[in-house]
Image 1 (tube, rainbow, N blue to C red):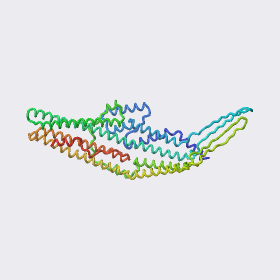
Image 2 (image 1 turned 120 degrees about the vertical axis):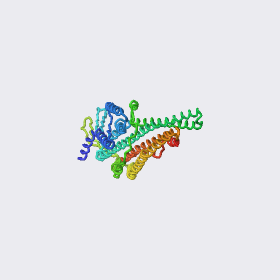
Image 3 (image 1 turned 135 degrees about the vertical axis):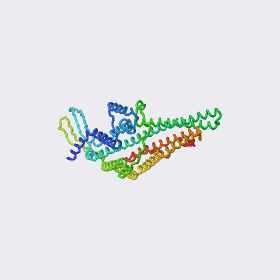
Image 4 (image 1 turned 180 degrees about the vertical axis):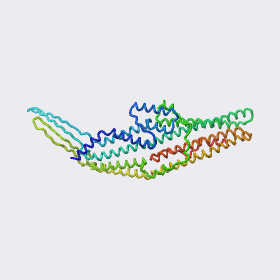
Length: 471
């Protein structure tokens, strides 16, 4: 009896903690975000909060949007992440509800019997509740606590994925706009060459073939510029979608003129620190799922044959007679369903969760190694362009100009060299883009939420054609 009273008291305590659990989960996700990204997580639950946050976003959009500010907007304003927070709150509330006792059931019965001797009235009253649920209340509360932990981890994983997507979208948008700007210089050089070739052909100093070649170079450069501008627009709109900006705010979005400078050296400390797997979200989620499944298996073994046990207090009264008091116990008899299917299903789900956890633990460091290799390679390539190829191309251009001034080469060779130099700069921008994409992917992989890697093997668009024109 004492255990029953204690269980009922625990149920009463759990009755008012749904909003508290939601707030605690949100606070845990916000702490995780502050530690990992430095950005605050805000769940906008009213029109006033949404208006206040919109004003803050307007202030951020008043200047070129930095990557950290883009992350800040996504975590506090993006409708997509607001959905994540709302669904996490709904899951948390359901977990809280699952730990509570079902409400007791009151039944009322009124029967009238008429006979030649008069009219009799029978009234029956019963108050019933699930005794099995009461006995299993501690296990239900523990299972609910595991579900709360799962909810926090899953929301944190969604946050990491969103941050990686936003950072990569920002890098893509800035790099695409920067590339389109340099592509305009290629078009200008090609256009000047085509116009000069037209004039030289008109006075008989150029053949139709030579003019056609210059015109083709100009046409190719114009097509590449159109593609570069389209890519810049598409990349910008992809960033807008990640941030969840409405049309009015999207129109005010401005980006920096260039990507951040490459770091002088790479710090491998953050990678080496991941030898301990305890901090990885994917492994923690798998372990939480395993523990929750184990609890489910334990309950399934207990309740597989007896799914419910109802007890009811009864009071019946009849006209002219004293009231009857007593209780009723309702217990299903396992004649047809012995619970073997429920136990087998629970065991299978547990084995699946166990092997899923083992698989996650076995391959947890593989994405880190993969993305770390891409990160270092991308840095080496970008640094090679910055320190070797771009300066070499600049020296070649200086020498070409000296030869042109000495009348050793013509203007077309000088224009072709200008196109080649600009193409090298565009390739350098793409190499820097790939590094920052790999950097965002590595950050996500270190926490346990792998993000996509850049295709480091992909050549720059049109680089081969433009480069060939300079020889």
